[in-house]
Image (cartoon, rainbow over all chains, first blue to last red; front, side, top):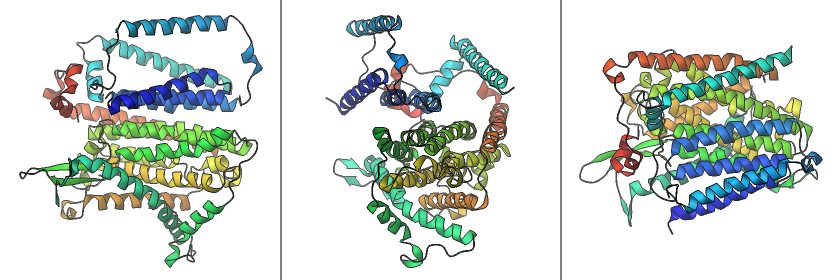
Length: 170
Length: 381
């Protein structure tokens, strides 16, 4: 077994443990923290595959920005103690079970049919800033429009956030 | 100064250089902390016209070691109402990104004789990765977890306030810092730390701070302000404001756990000063070719020490900001300025690029080509 694969399996075990903790832990702060752990593990996976840019962006956007906001809100609402509301049995539990079973099944199927390329501990994929930039903004490729559309969507989100914040302060 | 590529068993010097760099840089950062504490206290005393530490050892040099021994021997108190796991994990979570960040710090460029008269420049850096500066931004944003979790796990209202302040402050100033860093990336044309420093070789006029005048200078100032805020140092030390929050997020921490927070502050001060040096002030490059006989790492260390002096100077000069003033400065002043600098730099760069370079998109290699060493090297920019 190569050093790369050993690293992969250790990291995979860590990642799955953290992912289970996200849903199994009743303490919201610990749950959010476990999610940060998952994000960091994913980022290391990207780095190990040579997709350094994707790994760094994963770290900056998810672990560094979004999860900090999550934690900030959880702490602001002081959701320290387990909430009895979470024990309420409704339609959500069976639906969630069904959805996760379907996802797991389709992933397992994809794995069994070898639909995804087997890249564990193998050659790096190309993910440098330059390559991604040229690919995204190449007029000959279809992604420029989608990219601009996404930035408009983000802009709408920013304007919406400002409008919502302004109404509160009146 | 050319170093021969010594053979060390199955490896050569170039092979083991990243590991040598790892041990050296980590060691220097950890060992420098006591001297930094001493340096800060002496400089503060100088500015405030008093004597400062002068009892332990020559010129008080051993004062920090005495403080360290004192912290070691203090009773390790765990308040009963804390969330134990997170309480103990918080200082560690703060330390990891602070130390991991030095992996991409380019300290020096060594001239190594590869044999057969071929002399190559090999950077003295742990990981010469293409996205070095993004890696640094990612790690800086992770550092906030230590403070936030320490504040929350302490189960203390002052600590929680400190943690909340810290997360709000770090998120706010990270934006301006990122914009300033991106301006630097545009000026250098690379996200690789080593390439950024190499692009600044020459005189002072070739450093990023002096390029695209005045845009480089503006971005540098924004970066320097944001960097003080990111490290939670005075005048942006609201998360631990003694007079309001009784030390804030580390109120409940004693003994070595407190010492770890202390060390983190100084380690990240050094690392972020190193980043500022590499990004804006030429890294290991000398200010003038006539001074090139001085080795690169000396210039690097001199510049970092100068930045630490700026940190102390700012701390001694400016009073702590009020919380709303802090937010207003971050969002209403720094961010628009940084954004404008970024957009103007990009426009300038686009306008001055010759027309023949603009037309036509370069051929993109298919993903499987990345395995070939030649393709990797051409992407290294």
